[in-house]
Length: 403
Ligand code: HAM
Image (tube, rainbow, N blue to C red):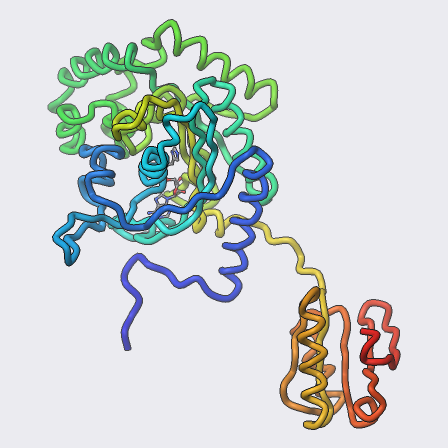
């Protein structure tokens, strides 16, 4: 028997219903906010992710599903959605148009991580990317949209926010941080030591408790925000307060992808164990330019569908449509004709084997139908059907053309 690859999952039966419910709920809300569907390929040039997610990130450094294809191209299964959408945005020359563009997407992402609960090698994200809007109002609006998605799905969360500054304030902060980290270098872990040279900001979200204790005294980005970033971050907090969306400011929230600036956020759940981030995102005003497009401000997020599947409360399934069955073999063609007609508007479950009345009624529960339609010898001869409304319990024999 050939087994499933490590870190991958089949989506079957009841799980696929959860998956669809999450995507449909999120897409319905995203459309209300003006987002339209976009789909980009799973396979992209490796260089796309190196330049966007960043060479020093764990994703690019350790986790890429990267290979050379038959045409000797260096390609990669996308580890996230944003980079591909920015590439598509530039390819379609949308960066040259004054119109603001908003896209939503969902699909599989691939990261060669160590599999554990909540951490898969193939997982699915639902995400949104908004281009052309540089106002912090858009950051607020995106956060509100995610909050509405989680409320609609009946999921509790904790929202963490931070500001990562811009090209004016970030370099100054980075310089101060590096000199402070260099002083405690000997005591920090190996990963942190490597990051001091490659991406010092990432030291802040080291998972090692000893490092975290040492970092308490290190300089905080919020004290270095420039005249533009500081009031914007305050405005964001004030708007969230006004909306009644609870949040905590997490000074160490730097995100694992290098393209962010200004607003960064994560939605976390306390109910799914160590891999607790259920959505993450932020502003990435320089990414379009990094990928050779015309400078375009942008902000977006993605939520992890598998993690949310653990949390979602599915609504009760309401009975719908028809269960149709025949009591004689001869009645089956007439039944199929009727089912095809009804399926233009309704859900229909057809039982192909002819059986007695009682056996049919046993199958009705599983179909979760609203009505039962049976055709026996008499009905076939008279051009009628036996119809039962399972809610009112009313039974009737009606002309087959009246159904
Ligand atoms: P991210 O934080 O890397 O952001 O991923 C977003 C979400 O995907 C996480 O919060 C988590 O729920 C889920 N996720 C990530 N890795 C795994 C995994 N190995 N197994 C299961 N679920 C996982 C991004 O990917 C950005 N592209 C988000 C974004 C969009 N920023 C701006 N626009």
